[in-house]
Length: 258
Ligand SMILES: Cc1cc2nc3c(=O)[nH]c(=O)nc-3n(C[C@H](O)[C@H](O)[C@H](O)COP(=O)(O)O)c2cc1C
Image (cartoon, rainbow, N blue to C red; front, side):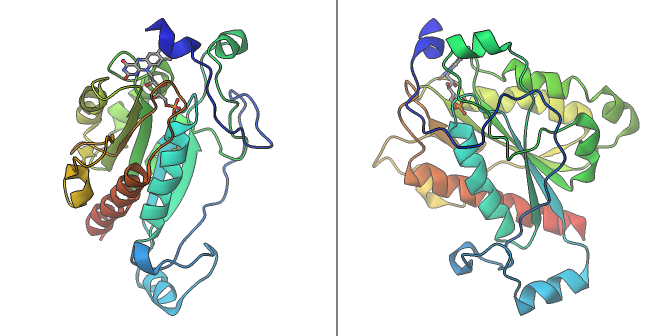
């Protein structure tokens, strides 16, 4: 397993980046106003007549997309999931999970610097969401410590039922095809069940998931990508599945939020 950690990652680093662990103010959400992905406009701030109608009808559901990403694959997928969420008229807020590893360990692992534009989620913020989608890079077939650390701060939410009945989904990334995409999703379900959250899978609504024409990540449980040694980036098909997941998930949230 050490090879995962020691491979150099040819990942373009974003400007303005910094190590995580700092508390930052919550960024205001970005919103896309159209109802279907194929009819989306290029500017997220552009408001249409239909969106104004939608907004006046009832409060727009708020969906949190919360990810941990060491090498950038999950972060790339997360942005696509957000696009899918926003295509339904829901409000999407993107967060990252706090780092738990020391800087010297991250350096040895060739970790990408964190994107300083994305705020770090605090456990107490979770009840503000109408639905949550977690982006998780697989560690030994399951969830990384960084994600578990967030889960472990949810004892108060378990006590108060603050997350009870909220839809939740996951998308993931592994080094290899058999590396544990489905086990990563399923090992999160225990947490979701204890909190009373409703696990919403990706399913097969996007038929491209069934394609055997090319190697790709993802399954019925959620969108996924294959990072390989780190140099492989999410493919067009994988990004399409990620956008579908955001779109389908948000539609479920909208139904339940009525
Ligand atoms: C400690 C460690 C354990 C890992 N365990 C697995 C594993 O069990 N299966 C697998 O396919 N990939 C494994 N990987 C590879 C990661 O899943 C891969 O780096 C990650 O999906 C890339 O996503 P990111 O760029 O968003 O960090 C592991 C990586 C590390 C650092």
